[in-house]
Amino acid sequence: MTATRARARVAKGPSLVFLHGLGGSSADWRAAISLLPSRFRVVAPDLPGSSLAPGSLPAWTPAAFAAWVSDLFRQEGLRSPHVVGHSLGGRVAGELASDNGFLSSLLLVAPLGAAGYSLTDRLKWKAMSRTIVLRSVPEAQMRRALSYGFVVEGPGKRGFVERAMAARTGPSAAAATEAIERSVDGVLEAPPLTERLRGGKVPIGLVVGSEDPLVSPEEVQKLVRTRTDARLFRLPGQGHYPMLDDPRGFAQLVERFVEEIEG
Image 1 (cartoon, one colour):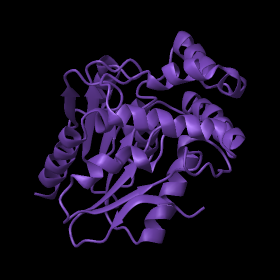
Image 2: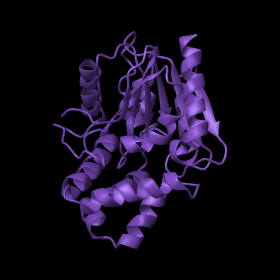
Image 3: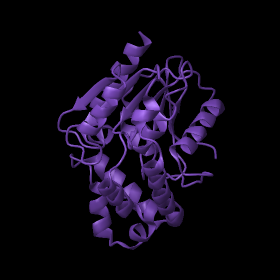
Image 4: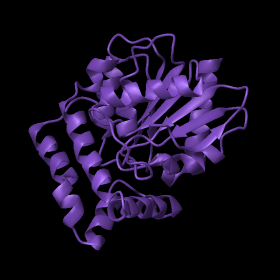
């Protein structure tokens, strides 16, 4: 499947690849990308199963997503890109961590599967992601569920909810809801990121909102103990979607992180 992009900007500077989260799309990055300096080359694909490009994979595992992303790198001629991944995209980006020399850095934003899931958490994630639930709940209840994780009432939240609602009610609704269920199962069954990142050499940044109800700061802190060289960005008053709640602040964070890596 050929990637669709919110923005593909040809430039002579560092290459940045943005991987969106579960149930999201490349549009989730649009505001933040627009605030990045024009010297960056930016690619923001719609992953298979996204709200804009349902698509399919041979398996809905982090490893299968990572293989898809690696193929995208080849299609786009990307060499040593900086990869920014949010939520599911963060877990997928972490799957690339062992590609020393191929990636310039990883910036993982509220990554799923940071340290594994307890039985209670596994049951919670499964309950939230079942196809029969996603197709049957009333619209008002679904909108509340999609708003979970936001701390700011603004255009970022409204746009995310509207795009996600359209995906769940449009012509590709069946594929979109199935992709969510199977992607969640793939993350739950995959080794935690603490194992995937152990021993890697790719420079890593970890971003977490202090008010994130889906990926807690304590969970991300376990990744810091695995990769003591990782840089931790804890965002006061932010939730699960910092690039949508505060696109300017998020763009500045990305710019600083990449510039530090580039030297």
